[in-house]
Image 1 (cartoon, rainbow, N blue to C red):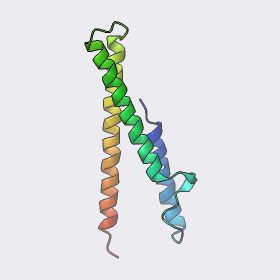
Image 2 (cartoon, rainbow, N blue to C red):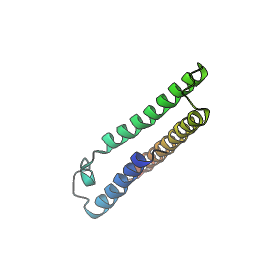
Image 3 (cartoon, rainbow, N blue to C red):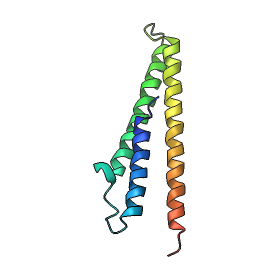
Image 4 (cartoon, one colour):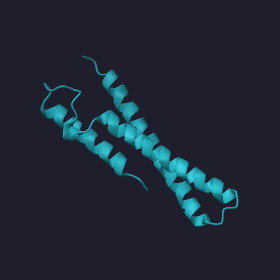
Amino acid sequence: METKGIEQMLSVLRSSATQAASKPSESAGAVAGGSDFAQVLQNSIAKVNQTQVQANQMAEKLAGGDTSQNLHEVMIALQTASVSFQEMVQVRNKLVTAYQDVMNIQV
């Protein structure tokens, strides 16, 4: 299961929250650790997409009669793609909720 990108994203979020709490005068565009949040998010989405594409290709080869594809490997790849997609949806839901919370703050 590919969770490195999501863990990295959560790490960036935590460090950004810590930085924002300790230094409110700094620019909001700078992210702690030198990583750009948008780039981390984009890389994570690309990895999930790549996992899904590879799993679908393996399934198509197996369905086409390719004997080099093992059924259990295909099933594992499909399940990994499904779980990684579900993880990405949950991260998106958390980000949307956080955004809505910030937008509802009265100044």
